Figure 1: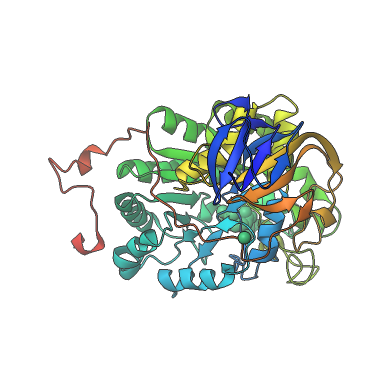
Figure 2 (figure 1 turned 120 degrees about the vertical axis):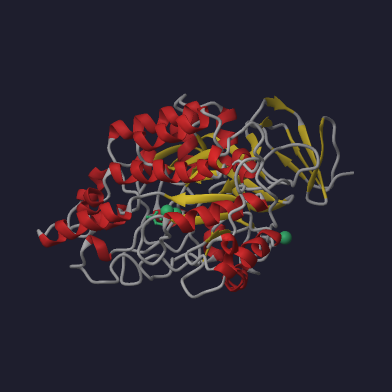
Length: 488
Ligand code: URP
Ligand code: ZN
Ligand code: ZN
Ligand code: ZN
């Protein structure tokens, strides 16, 4: 006897589409079969039964690179994610300079505990890799189940240099962690910005001008080279250019442990949105910036071809008021406006509508990009698939339902959505985390605190041979273990 049975639905995984019933017991998928009996049943007639989404790039209860706090905390952020078909999310825990890493994780635990309606973990942003952080705290973070570390190559308050990047890549690799990088050339952006502002070009549209495509491709090339030197796995987040995507693809074809992520806004929006009157364009400011329609097409090709393992929202919610985008007043220059846009509830509906419903990607690709790939890369080994023994994290979708996007349906703390008025076909109607309904019939039914912290495992690198630079061959040289204490 099961606790819950899902009947009459079509199961979709990254491998298959088939009809069967799912029997859930103690929060796990206990069986997949027919004629199952339980005290509780969900009738999924006409619906698709998918792995619950895993949102692997979002900023929740986080101080931004310009200082402000995101509008969403773990309660509102998780609720919005759940309405968008997610059973789990992995926001960032951001170390700031002069803060320890363990102190940072404790702070985020206090922000998340008892607040989230879906399961969660954190990627650790490393902004101050001191010797103590490298030698003691990153391994300790890994033991706490924080198995991915993010670094920034730009933003004055966050950026690390190439040597620090190599230290972090090496420590991450030793522990089985995945390094993630925001790859943009900081000097190019600063140089461009200074000249634009001096010439009086301060409106939001110049944010995109100041972040040229070359700044991304230069930094991606450098980041991949650093990772290859020490044969460490590296994921390039929010790739926004065809040039950047091609670098990721070439490195993958060569067997390097390189992974890519792109985000909804780069497929669905363009920089034309920054041209809106007054400060309206600020709603569409993010880094890297929106590009053009040729870029959108190229990024679709890369999504189809498997260059991108992860497809995220990069939900970075700053309201269009004094608490967010307008904190520095109505005449602020683009340099003073918080970067980022919201979209955690729309990542999957947009991908379904524009991807699956329009025939650009298969249901299997949708399942992989929803959850399965992120689960493997980020060590969420009990999640991301519909299989016996896995957590019963499930999203039941109505592929025919069509809705018009409205800000009030996002269930976040935002006062705008960049997708207002879009028509989207295919919506999640029921979302389970560990077998319990979080969203049911379009309503929130779980309490804050239902979501639990998930300690993650090491990254699964099956199929990526990689290769160490010859100079680091331990047989002939000093070995790949470059610990801070070995330096002269
Ligand atoms: O503009 C963005 N994406 N803001 C969020 C922080 C980041 O760089 O991911
Ligand atoms: Zn970033
Ligand atoms: Zn981000
Ligand atoms: Zn619960």
